[in-house]
Length: 524
Image (cartoon, rainbow, N blue to C red; front, side, top):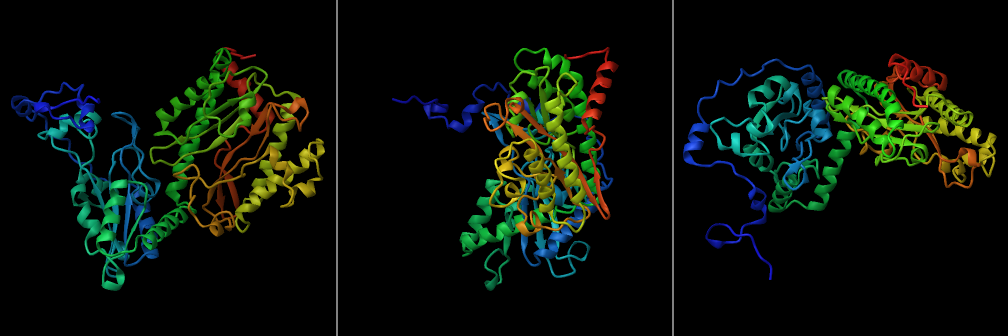
């Protein structure tokens, strides 16, 4: 027989309420009355318009032009449970952040709605009026102030008011309670005079349910509607292929903080090498400290992979030792408060000196990266960047006697033998997501023409696993990747991460200089 926790009068207590069983919060009328009194006046609302507001408005105009006459619904997303009654730090969906300019962590459950209006009557003469629906700061005379552990100011700090976000981001604002009417009014089949609704799906299940229920109630076929939602996601992704001036500045800010984080990593390497079991975690921790002090967070989980772990492409366990004489591959990026992230990789000799074999492999990867930089220019295709890097690596592997076929055969679509040691792509777009623009059409991404304003990575690598019997023993257990963040300009490209040393000589001199500046620390 199953026993149930009971509430008043012996009735079974719902599971959802039991999370509060540990609570000893006061709830007497006397407490509530006292709690609502004797608070200082709230600080005056900030009224300055932020620079990002104009850029976000321009982005909204561009997406408005794609979908005239249609209602567009973009949720920020809800808080997500990490464990029981504790949540992950909130991060809004990237499409929402892009069109509002909002970053950091103050708008869980918010929804941006672009309402269709007559042509020319919308924002700045566009096709839509944009309104941000969110939960504003509750008054200190409300129970939410002290009793709501997810949203109450006493628990999680203040939230902006409707007026503050209206002024700072140039958006109409409404209380979240008005969202249902805003999303569902006049919705229905266009042939019957209704308004078509497009939704960024699988961000907020409550908003999904609201839209889908409205569609069912108004006779909209869900399968074609789902395809329309996919077209919106695709368009929003393609909107980010070319970055505006504000986005480039934010990416450079994220890159600069990441470069500082790599300096922290070099500083901690001697101590990490002295940790018997989990030196990789010390490296990870040093970078995380930089990400949290200079940015919002990590852009993605840090890869700190020493020795053979560096041959695991997404090694984020970081449970290994840091061993002098081995290489440590660190793939890391700081996410700025605006939510734009860097993505940089360096492969460092733990003791500050590459061995002859390590240097040989490292130089091959560097040469492949340099070849990719040469073709990363306007007019070429995105796929050309990868092809240039593969040409170098295949011929280098051939010269080392590792390929079972000539390089020409390996480079053919029917060959690809060299990909055994370089199985991933050389580049991906970078922005609000570390793998940005992922829903863009193939002809605009992989087959797309490179344009000024694009930002993407260049990151070739070679990975020789310890158990790989296809290579001589001296290569086994070595993984090398070099990754930089590249801005395409009108006449070429700029390496946004050029402040971080790339050549083996530069890396060795940089590491030695940092250690000598800190009382001669040396992990060897």
